Length: 354
Image 1 (tube, one colour):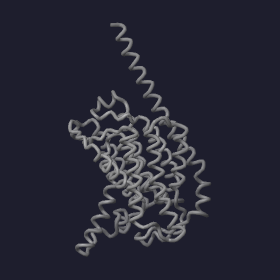
Image 2 (cartoon, helix red, strand yellow):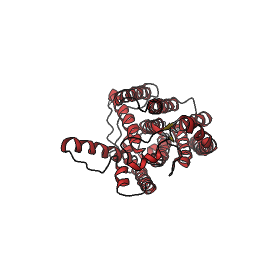
Image 3 (tube, helix red, strand yellow):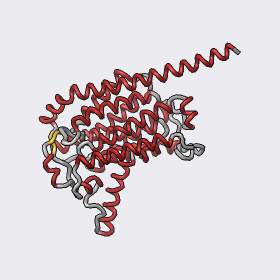
Image 4 (cartoon, helix red, strand yellow):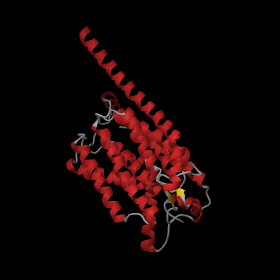
């Protein structure tokens, strides 16, 4: 009896050591990525002012013409800081870490290609080429999740935890859809100073915590969520939070630099990857509700104008609608950030709902 008691206590202490080790690295990674972002940010902006000047996006309010020649492609800086800190803090023996970084780089490369075309030729890549490239990268990452990382192919429904149908190979196109949809949704949201990155920060923090909980058997069992062995992604989530905070320092209104497609596509893609890896991708609809609203506003605007010749909003995505109503840009960003934060809190609350 004493032997079994000692074995049980030893297992509990081992679990606590692992938990504390992961949480320490996640917090340390957050602080170091924030530090490097603030340390090198000004120098990157100086170089960007010479190399990466671009005009404001088409189909934006006339007031955005004042943002012409603003340096862009700040996503390159974000990706560099994430990669550097991943090498410092992540367990590189974990396949899911490499897949997450491949997702970040793959979607970032597509965005970089598009941004560079806009800078050099005043025209990005075609929508068809961009779409096909995104699906290609997403296919490679989805196949890696299933066949290299061994991710379970079941679908997990947050409010019906006993109903987890295994969809087999169909999980691959499902994962592809999630990554492509969220990367484009974040890209649509990136239209005001600090809007996209400010909304991504609570999402990265939320899914860092979910990956942490789903990565430990006892926590997962207590919450009645699938054990996904995803704890290491909590460290990467910490890096993403720290890097995003550092970028927001320069991107907040009035912005000194934009992240560009290279940043928006990359960050949207890796957030989707975190959701898929911890088997809670459906919760992205709630936590990333702001990105969903932005995307739906564009779809409704296009549908309404095409079939009825009328516009529902003054301009889409919806943040431009509020801008044309007279809301200051900083107020829109702050209020949308609050909405995103509240949605992320609701997401965490659903974990215990059965």
